[in-house]
Length: 420
Image (tube, rainbow, N blue to C red; front, side, top):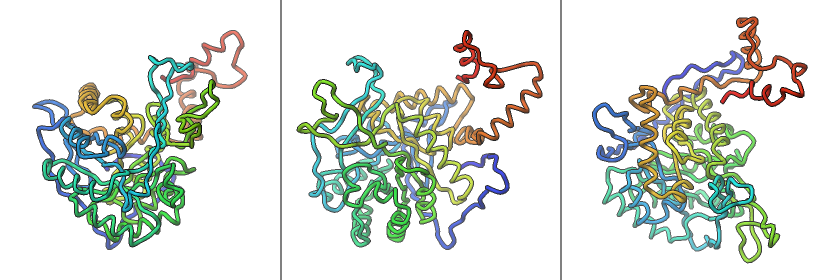
């Protein structure tokens, strides 16, 4: 990541961590210059290189239904996505049994009007239920047809070193450019000591990450769960264990709602439901906070080019710009594709380039991490404002004390302290 100036007190600053005796795994894949994002002369350049993975733009299909088989992944490449992360696979797909319906939506209108925008999406879907060999054959076909495009295998396995090593070996043999480790699926899989069961247990995460990194020969990204008190703790362990990058966030554990006519929870399967993963626009602010925390961790404690792939509620180029401004190298989209289709990438690229033009940025590196230094503590905010008040003297912005609130001007007084 680029060098950024970040305020830190001497007592809390952590020395940069370099992993001794550990050479970074770096892929070597050339991006197709004709794909979305390369731009013409004078156009902002969206291309990125992450852990040696060269992409025409930073937009990556997130692991899930949009990467579930050859047909849809081929469509993603044809539309111009920078990369594709396939739906998570494991050795024994026979243990994976999905149900229908498995999705539920939250609309902006409190009454759920059909024309109201969708702001939240819940799924209780499991990892791929297709035979591993079938998925691997499709990976091989995709890499044969699109040798210069980035295909990342998402993997998950039970608590068994031999099983992890077998899965890694077989998936790598299919020709994937990197691996994303699913340490974060919040439903179904944790019951088998998989997914979030690993990502929420730092001891278990350290052990499994060690197994993975002693076997993998391509770059490894660890996909983190937001369903934890401090997301930097597992992120730190994954990176110290040798992972080249972190992806965040996976979905947030949720109950979408209760049907007030039937009194049954949604999504309703034979009258019953189970908590599932929450995504879409409503999770974006939460994802921004988690990504900011991980970006600061990487900047302060690591110095070997570890990467960050941001996930959470991306539907516009501006959504992506926010993640990149915090320090993300790539931006993943899954639910957005389910709602808007694969052509969404064209809109994302165009809007991100519009943002770049407005600020005279010519490349992603020009603004990656630019907003990260502006996050601090509440104590520091108080000190900064007190100093600013002294400097402005009689000029006042908002209220200085709780005693200044009045009943008649309450709304205007509130507005005077809102920043956007």
